[in-house]
Length: 637
Image (tube, rainbow, N blue to C red):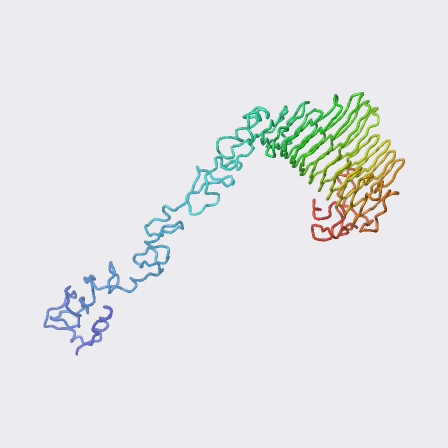
């Protein structure tokens, strides 16, 4: 019988199966020589299973003229020739990752970003199938051992992203010191910017033996860096806008006038760019500005201590012994003016003092966190008259804004046979101008004299605005008279908002207004003010809380008057019970210390002043303001 074959089977692999279904006798033609199993390369037609010549063996079922189109027929196709042909397996043509490259050409047919046509990228793979990984695309990183963000050029690694402890720049010239890097040069005794020059090349004492030598060798815009030490000299900016910095701080870097003053002089038109920072200015002796003298200049003064400067002996007048400012818009920040002294050991003549700690005339200076403490005006021998117009500070014709700090422990005293010594303004004496104070504590500015007045502030004329201020613990003793242990308002207009006037006392002869003294022509307005425990003693006492020569000069709203003594109000109508004014225990947190500066005048939970203030003023928490120095929107200080 004849076998029935499909004329052109699609796959060679089907032939053996079909042959098994045929009669073996019909598949063999013994009239021709036996087939060797390898057809001639030039078959003229598809094998039909019957050779044109006698087979000696069963035909393999392959007719290469129809099936192969260029394959190698020395052996049956298995679907895997060295190059694809039409008879190869369909797997040879697969592109599993869809990147356009078949499996036999793609070195990773499971990753579409890997193929011979890809561009090498830094990802840990051989993207372009050239046998190398991340060639020519790795980035160089530099070790940052000191963690300053700048790398060591001598310590590198290559990676696609910075490993921990490495950065992309090589700007560090000392990777063991975080203060040294390719950044901005600062005063610290090292080469911060890696330019081979330490501290701008103007270091004292390395480059210059003294501060004044450095000033003389510098130009406006330069920075002079001063190491810790005591420099026995006086300095003058000489009109140059220099930055002079004691980079190890005021406690360890001193400019000592050694009996000569002013110790520091800035009076030749210097601008705000002229900066003095990080020094103690001490040892000056002069009639005016023994420590610091500033006139017609607007310097920036930061982190200074101005202390132990004196005006004594041969002078009739002492003005601004600690610091003197005239026609200046100076900016002071974190400055302490402390323990300066004006004294007269002589045995005759007159002696006057204007601001033992500070004198300001004209200009519009700005003070931030400035302390005025422990300055003393004293007469220590026989002398005709000694008068102090502001022991802590004397202000005249200025527009001064002062935020943060203390005015405390400034004192006036006389020993020996001094005729009628007088003192006005233990803390501040305002002759004229404008004074704005916020978040400033006045305390313990004590005066003992023939007449003493204005323990915290004495106002002759001008405008005073006090907000979030405390006035506490002042003691004034006057052989003849003592007025206004807290405030003496001789003239001008004074406004108090969220202020405490607490525990101030008068003693001696005639005493008036232990809390507030208001003379004719002066006006004062109180809102959210606590006037508590002020006492007028002496042989003739009036007005423990308030004394006024005219009731028209005094106005009070939402204020507290408590622990008032026997004669609380003189010359004014008792304000309690009207206009929101109350009488209630403020229950301050702590007033046990002998020093008013150490009192904590914040309110306890039981205070009658909590949320009892002006409803138009809100505390930080949004509630109605508290009465006292720590109420209102700026009460957190």
